[in-house]
Length: 349
Image (cartoon, rainbow, N blue to C red; front, side):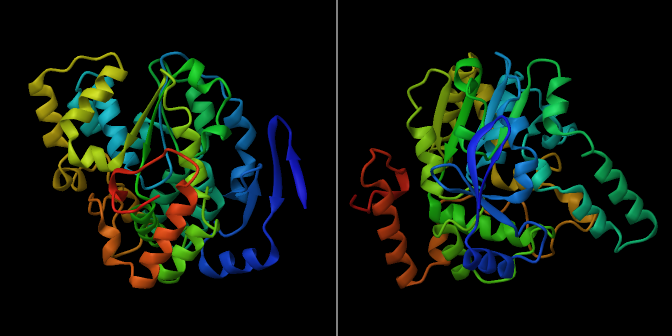
C-alpha cells in the first residue's frame, strides 16, 4: 500500500509481508517495523515517518555544518574532527560537553523513541528509574526544534540519504560526507544492532549480512546512499571523504577538512588532534563513547559504541562463500559508476 506524507515528496510503501516477517523475527526491539521510501526504495523504520517532513523542510543557515554518513562509517570520529577544527581546537569544551549536545542528530527520535525507553525504565525502581526518566526528558524537544533555538554556528549529524534532507542543503551550508567499505560497515552495524537494547538484534552476522545486502536494514540500499553523495562531490559545499583515507593519513585529511572549513591549523595543532583521535584515547573519551547510556541499562553488555576503529576487519567475519558473494554484490553496484573505494583495489569492476 502506497502513501504520501504532506510536505515530503516521496511515496511510502509497506514492506512485502515476507520482508516484514524476516525483519520482525530478527529484531526484538521497537525498531522492527519498516517501510520503503521513494524511487530507490530506501528502507526506514516506520518511526522515521513521524519526523520525515520536519527534517526535509527544516530551515538551514549559511554557518551550519553537517556531518552526513551511512551509519557506522566513521561518523563519530568525523564529528569530533570537524567540531574541533571549526571551533579552533577547543579541547576543554569538547571533553566537558558530550557530542550529542554539540551536534543535533536530526533523526535521533526514531532511534530513541520515548515510549520504548520509558518501557525499559519500568524494569527498574529507585535511583536508576529516576535517571532513565531524566534521560527521557532530554528528548522531549525534537532536534529540529532545538536547532531553531540554537545560535550559530550549528552542527548537525545525520545518517539520512541526501535526498531526504532539505533541497537547499548544498546551496546553503557545508556538508562533510564520509563513506566506508560496506563490508566493514555491515560488521560495525551488526555490533551496533546488538549494542542498543531498543534494537535487540537476535541472530548471527551471516544473517545480518543478508539483511544488509537485501535492503532490509535501516536506510539501505547502501550503495544508493553513497552514490547520492558521490554524484555531488564536486559541489563546493560538499567534502567527500573515505574512512579508509582518514585512517591511513589522518594529518592530510585534517588539512583537507580545515581547508574546506576555511581554517589554517598549525602543524602542532594537527599533531595534537591526531593524538586526541588515537583509538585508545577515543574509546576512553566519555564525551563520545556513550558509556553513560550503559549505566541506564540502554546498552548491552559485551558490546561497545567505539569499537576497533580499523579497516578490513570484515575479514574476521566472512567465510569464503560470503567473500565471493560480497565481491559480486560490490561489482554489480559499482559497474556503472566511477565510484571506487580505496579498500577495493583487488576487485576488478
